[in-house]
Image 1: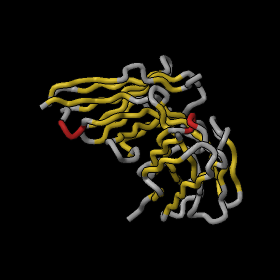
Image 2: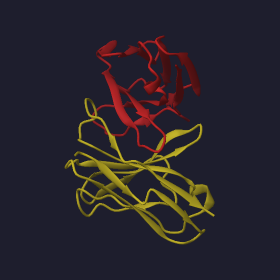
Image 3: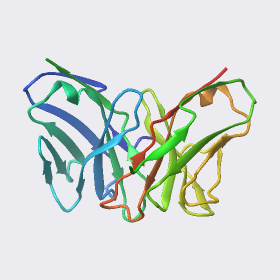
Length: 112
Length: 114
């Protein structure tokens, strides 16, 4: 059973608007969360992360929000750009373990 | 340039013919792992290694072997490939510690077993 879930396989957004990608997890022991971005024919690349002691982390146009009580995190991209069109994976890990659990990914399409 | 290099990028093989996918990283990372990506399932860990000569099973290890004789290399071996191992494979490396570390991924190997 997947411990990290991304329930939206795809999302389409107009350029300049906000993109919100969602991720849910089941393991309350997860304490570190990451978002990866993947273009076709390339490996995933790290985008932004958040530890469980925070509820928000911001890096330029990208902000990740963590709601521990709901076991939910989200990635906000503002403003969205066509170059943001990619598959976004949510991942989580526990403690000192380097084992990352990944969601199934959300394909974001930003329309010009 | 810091990178994880996988070879080959694409491979078509027949059932039962042994193959090896190589992975090499130049960041002196202790931790390396292999993932497979399948539609609707995301990335699932096959095997991981916490350092030289230390390997362990991930979530989907059946049909795979690995070795870690050198820190930089972590090959994935399919002794007798089957069609259900047709997938997109990624090697990744990271520093130990879990929190505040990120995994660096190779560009992927698309394997087709016929």
